[in-house]
Length: 382
Image 1 (cartoon, helix red, strand yellow):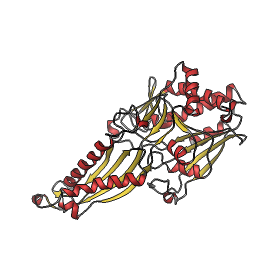
Image 2 (cartoon, one colour; image 1 turned 90 degrees about the vertical axis):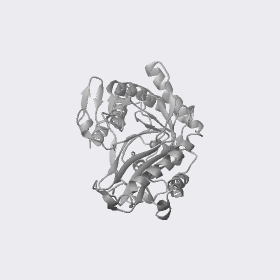
Image 3 (cartoon, one colour; image 1 turned 120 degrees about the vertical axis):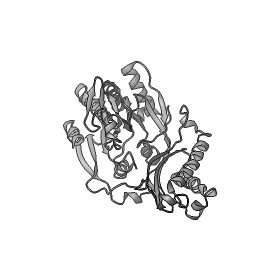
Image 4 (tube, rainbow, N blue to C red; image 1 turned 180 degrees about the horizontal axis):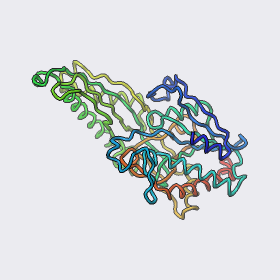
């Protein structure tokens, strides 16, 4: 509601775009987490509908706030301390929304006729787990000549990301009373063997780092995000479930990545007969994202960098990260150049997440200049 209200205040025509319940069947989609009924993207349109066009894209979903008692203040109550705003999502990526809207507001106030074409704003869901919100908008035709995503990039240009795969692994053991633990089969112990094999895959991937990840020392990570097993200290549990996130090379398709990870998991059966005879159940559970990269000398990257230099006196870095963003959907699947540029954030996905408020203003100065230049000097004239 807040995004919708602000877009209307800025003069955008606003609509709510439903996510098709069958989007999980789309070959580009991740595995949906929950039903989409009652959830939607918010789409804003400004301008005359003609070229040139530009799309701003941000996601409203956030990751859970683990162990709220460890936070300095409640994670879902914003707290300001000097130049920092604390709270879950302050950096990833509510600060980016503020930056983008401040830029548009300032540009229209300084130069009311600056937007001589179409400016679209997509406020999407599920960026943190599937990308299906942006995919649904793109499938519905919410596209432009280029896209800027105001993710927290530290006022640098984020131009590349790794492939991401989510899998759930369910390991079955043989439960018993703890007095018979030596004769039972504990799925926790079996899970540790599987993790060893996944670490081997991780080491193998990082021996051959692709050029687009230049400067990232260890881009491909296997993360055990959650682990659940058992319900009583004096019982050997029956099952254990690992939810894993694998960052993999861009050269791998989602299908190849899943096949390689499955092979690594099942290879634990080479040492453990129980695992060979009772292989774990493995199922896709979220991201099926390919890696992506926009060339650092792409005209879009050059123009954003030049706008930053005009505003701040120095050019920003163009960098990759060992993560993903919805920019991949535009670049890989819809031939739309896209990059991320946004504020300085700290501890995103961690405890006491925050954003530097002054960086929101600094980023807006860049973005307003970029938008004005984009329409004054259309892409086809460059």
